[in-house]
Amino acid sequence: MPQLLLKKEKIKFVKNLSDSILEDIIMRINDNRIPEEWDGFELREILAEKFRGEAYLLQRYKSRMRDYKNTVLVNNI
Image (cartoon, rainbow, N blue to C red; front, side, top):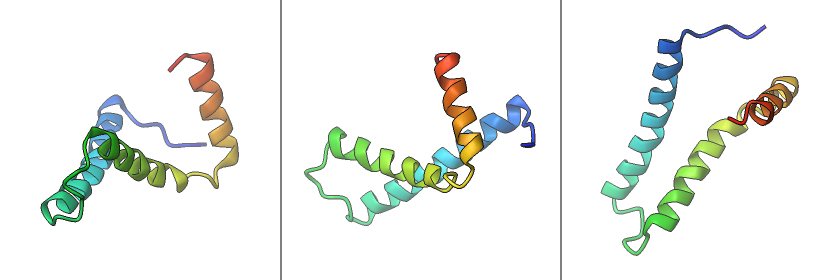
């Protein structure tokens, strides 16, 4: 059974994960590792890839992933 998180803990988790990904990408921009010609298209894609990478770690939890997808579909999240 998954541990239940309070609303404040959920918000903190989302902020921490997002901040970590944002800091990594901003560091790459500051280090000139992101091409200057990249605009919103490529920047959106790199953000999506980073978040997908975090989500990939959860693939081993098949039943929770199935339950998650069902909840998102049923509740129109």
